[in-house]
Image 1 (cartoon, rainbow, N blue to C red):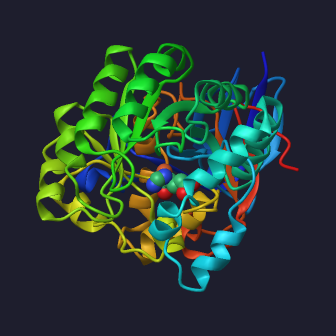
Image 2 (cartoon, rainbow, N blue to C red):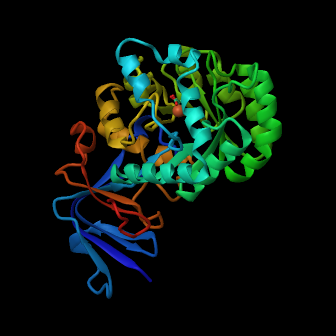
Length: 405
Ligand code: NIG
Ligand code: FE
């Protein structure tokens, strides 16, 4: 039996209640305990409370000194593209000089330039890349991450990506419909290939399927065909939708009962109202909007209308080269007009819901996985308040102290 006592915490902060996803007022309801402890046993939280209520005879237990620290749940990044080779630093410089992301994509760069590097890398190099990115995420407080394929777009590389993500402990999503690779004439022909040649094996490796609905990528009819086949193969459905243009991805997500629709920078009033009436979670990616100098998604309107929202990094080499959910929380507060408490719920319990793990991730409560982040801050709101700061003093993952080096 392994036990860890995190003691003398300045604050212990966790989303209130047990349900998921949190909507409306419930998004942002937290339990804050001062002068607190967390007892972890066999990878789970065994108890929490105030220090003066700590049971007297705990027996043999490792201790972690929480003085001056704030404990929040391990952060959950529910949307990343963490399995890639190479970089896009040349394109970054071109964009800084005025080129747009869409122009670079149309010219064969963008996603397709990462596809070339990822196809050439080989599975060992991809596994090493995801592992490196996992460590970056962990240092920023992310204890659970999703990662997508989508930089292979041929059978062997897509499957290698999914295996590499699993090997690093990520939650794998098959983004088989990310872009049309150059060896195909059109999106229909590529969709046929992906569904007949890749889906049967991808379905055994991935938990979800995702599609990029956008001009120059996949239209609504192709996306419907791709997602319906993925659903029949047992995968949860997700969409990249309304990033640049509102093509009908929101109604499609609702029609197919998708778990999430992600981006929503171009979503207007009807889309907000429709999402609020649905069970589809809107995953907001403000680091991507910032990185591409695009409009921010209508986060405040979504929350006020009662939609379920989560926040994620979109970590990738082209449109969001950041692994930091604390930065995303700062952007949520300064750009999306969400309070720090709403942001914290959106990167914990609601993100865990998107990954179908809200029964064990995203809260610090008995029975949940013992995943904690200890912030070197006097108040948990520093997570969003201290812009760009490295707050993470320690991480507990499954009741253990992982290497952060
Ligand atoms: O979510 N929009 C499409 N896909 C990614 C970008 C991937 C890339 O640029 O490599 C996104 O922003
Ligand atoms: Fe993305």
